[in-house]
Image (cartoon, rainbow, N blue to C red; front, side, top):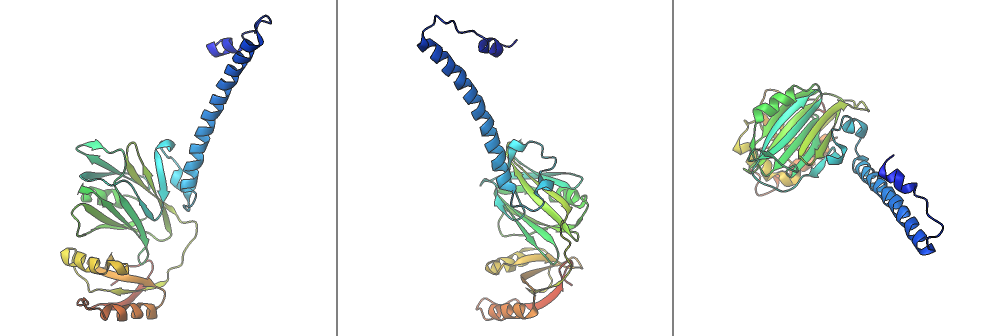
Length: 283
């Protein structure tokens, strides 16, 4: 018999005053209430985790095999998270259809992920990860790990004009969905890939685009020039890169954007309207 069971089985002598009896009963009731509150707190925490992730399609897939539920911060498909920091190094590990992105400072794993954003674009179907406060990224290891995942077509880095930030792009196969989970204690990001619940048909998408060029500062300057217009960098079929704006359903919309851009005083780089299928790369 445990100490608690012996305590609960104590018979209250009838000769004790009513005051003492009431005090003992109140003590027992308090213990039961505290136990109920502890259980309620755990339930509230579980509900909070569910609320955080409930707006993500395929959330059941995202949360399958979660190592420690208590460490999860959020699950998202597009958006941002993490905490502002600096001097972070990035390493990766991969298994099956998951990529884990780990963060360290001076060899010690960080408690949280650095500030980051995740974007999704089509033509081709791709994810764009940007991490701030990062000074060291093993890009070759990251590429090796990501290319080892099934349903990944390609991965490449983007040159950006910020020496404390890194950006890389992951091109996905057709009808592949994903989740991005953020954890803390320790901080890391998990990318999980799985089949899309809804099969999408390929369709033509129209952009305003630059001429082809190699990765480098010129490409980064051009992308930054049109950042306010939603610029991005896409790898072409022959391995070079273009800056694009738009992603329209009609050529007319792209032509209207080009007219506006070409009327600006800072318009120097010749741009043009082009279109290609949503599951392909530009020529």
